[in-house]
Image (cartoon, rainbow, N blue to C red; front, side, top):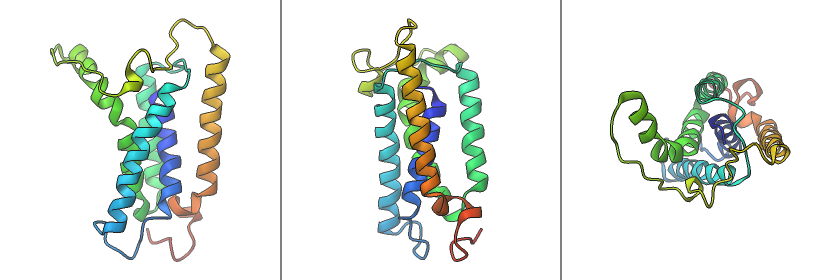
Length: 175
């Protein structure tokens, strides 16, 4: 799927996990590290699920990356200071498979390099990918994109107090 969908799901995951971050404990405490690892892992696994679903690519690559960075940056600015680390780790987990598997090809094309291109993650292999390039199953792709947006939106709405400053309770709103 386009990176923007991975980014949106990473924001929803961060919102859901943000209540697990212990504000009174240092970031490197065992419980907070466990939440950050869970966020990164959830990002990687959600990437796999989204790429496995049948989908087309409604955004071109450049627009996709720009919109994703705007989305992430906007949420970062609105996020409570304590929630930013979980937001970052979920986002990095969500884009990690593309950085590993697709990054070398992009670098080769843009910088005339010859880095080896290996698809490490199975959802980038042809037999497990839901990518649709021939225009077939357009409505299934649209339905899947809408389901991802709706589910992410509901999670963000449900857990907004844990991640967004404006909705935090007075004791949470420290930034």
